Structures are given as structure tokens and as C-alpha cells.
Image (cartoon, rainbow, N blue to C red; front, side, top):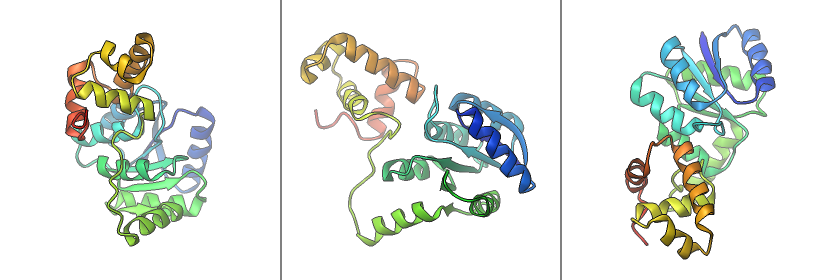
Length: 212
């Protein structure tokens, strides 16, 4: 089995490489951020891409979405410390086949790799517990879009999608215009959009900008 490892912590990547090699997995490439993860995966065409959620330049969730848009056959296993429900559902919506927490043992990671490589959906024990609790409760709660954004950034994006300029957003949130500009820059980087127009399209597709 061939794999690509995407994680922004070099020590963790090194440790994961050793673990995977012990399992007989050939790590053909590593990526320190989401943007490079997409490029490397498209070049190497591995059996599985192991993807962290929180990475610079492009989150693992957005990288998964972009990768599958360009290579629908890609098989992504999310391996992360992020355990909140929003990230889990966002990863699934982006197209990840598996979601396992970094605390998982070698055997669990190995089983998850085999399942994802075979095109099967698989979730770590803690993630599976969360999913069962969510569906058993019959919750009508929908995961918030863009879990890679902070609450403030999501609030700013909502107002951008509603058509408000930075000055009006600053006034609405009782913040300085400089703070809003910094938030906008961070939003663009995390969503990998080039300008305000692209951000508006992404936000409105996710249902933002309607209640302002």
C-alpha cells in the first residue's frame, strides 16, 4: 500500500512514517500543509492520503474537498487531534472515508488504512461513539460550516456574505476596521479563496449571509 502523509508537525510525521513502515505501508511523500498535500497526492496518486485537520495555508478539510474535486478516486483518512463534532461532519461532507484520532494505536490505524484503501468508510472508536450519540439522539442540529474558522471569523464571513463592507462589519461587531481586515485575510487563507467574491460564493453555498 502506498500512502501520503499530510501533517504540519515534522516530529509527528516522522513517527507516523515509522509506524506505517512497520505496517508494511510505503510512505511515498509527506506534506507540511494542505496546499502541498493536494499537489503531492495528485502527483503520487497513493492508495490512501492521511490528512490532519489543522494545517497552515489550507486546512485538511478544505484540502480533502479540493483533492476530491480534482481526483474523485482519492481516498482520504483523517488522522487528527481534533475531535469535535463539527470537524467530523465537515470531513465526511468533504469526502473523507475515515476519521481517526491521533491517540489511536497501531492496530487501529492499520485497520483504518486497510478499510479506506478498500473504499470503505471507517471511524475510530471515539469518533464512532460521537456519531452514534448524534444519530441516536435524533438531533436536528446541523454542523456549522467551515470548522477551520474561529467563531469570530465565521461571524465576519457571515456578514461578508450578506454584502457588508469592512467598515460596516466593524461597526456591527464593535471592532476596529484593522481587526476586521486581519480576520478577512485569515478567512481568505483558510478557505483558499483569492478575493471577496470567491469568499461570498463559498459562504452562500454553505448557507451563510441569509440572516443579516
